[in-house]
Image (cartoon, rainbow, N blue to C red; front, side, top):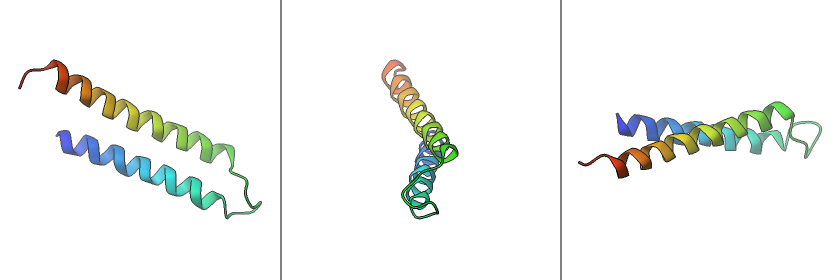
Length: 63
């Protein structure tokens, strides 16, 4: 179960990075649309919450 969360966060983060990178080359050149920035911000929040929650749970719960 732990690996599924980490893989999902990494894949989501990778899609956000790729989408932001690709949008540089779409017309108008060099401008990122607001929806792309919104999606990228949401991927950062999701990945941060998954990694933060994982670290918190791993630190608080004894093995």
